Length: 378
Ligand SMILES: *Cc1c(COP(=O)(O)O)cnc(C)c1O
Image (cartoon, rainbow, N blue to C red; front, side, top):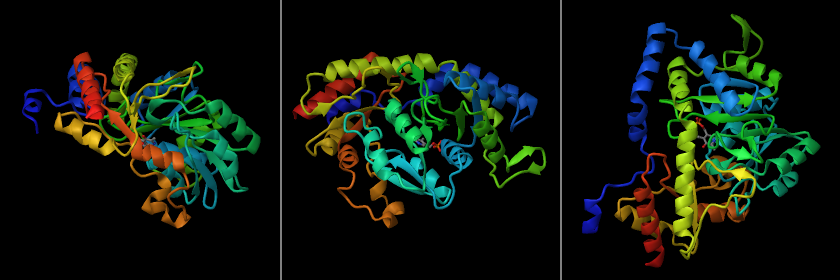
């Protein structure tokens, strides 16, 4: 470690303690109310959160569930996906996008991403469709909406359900409309590190389709449509009242946190504009990025050295995601090999996410950008 690095504070990837410090009184009061009520599952907080998150996503219905993964899985199940069916997913995402398909006994059909946006390449969808294909799951990776108009058009023509994986993009906009309202349904994750994070696991399904919402509402509670009357096999996957109370407090701050993330991104873009060897996030016209991650690309096999250079200076950075789905051990039986999805493989070798959490100061953002520029110049 160089001697100057010790004198300055390290910059983590995320600082949830700083966020908690800014809202501690509100959070303690909200949790206190739940403790007073002694109602912990499927109560007033959960249904209020469902209404508020649905409104935030410009949707009619929200159904709280145990996690983002469960939201994906229950939505696919409600859309009729079962054993032997196929669901098209991009190979470059968090593993849950594909694992939710696998958990239903269905098979993910992999598609590559666009080199520019790192989101699902719509031109790959038709080549993956078979008579067993039921759905497509575009991911709004890092907080940038996928190319939904084209995806929806193809899906409509081929009779596929479109389930948005909106785990990373709550609040983002595609041509003026909020993500979560763009397909047939959307899965949201409230995992603690997400832009809207609970204090444990939680998730939600949002949709404009009343029947789909009703089916997920039953599936999350043992297939019950009324108390002690079970229509079909389901699960126990519910969003509890303490998490709902925490999320309702945080939802009130989401817009201000989103603006802070976007301001940091603007600063990074400006400071890195002249640096050779780095590509900053590309945001197509008409799309609003909410920067769950601010992810640059570093070509020429230098990414890992750059990451080590930053670490020596106390700056955390992360690789989301180092192994595309088709190269994961869990999917070895699908018979894919290196070279099958070149855009995703190149992204996996080049991406690096820099700290972009709302509580960063402007000086910290500048320090990260300067260190990155120095790493590239060295
Ligand atoms: C976090 C995440 C999920 C899963 O959400 P959990 O709440 O952790 O189950 C799914 N897809 C993507 C893209 C994610 O980032």
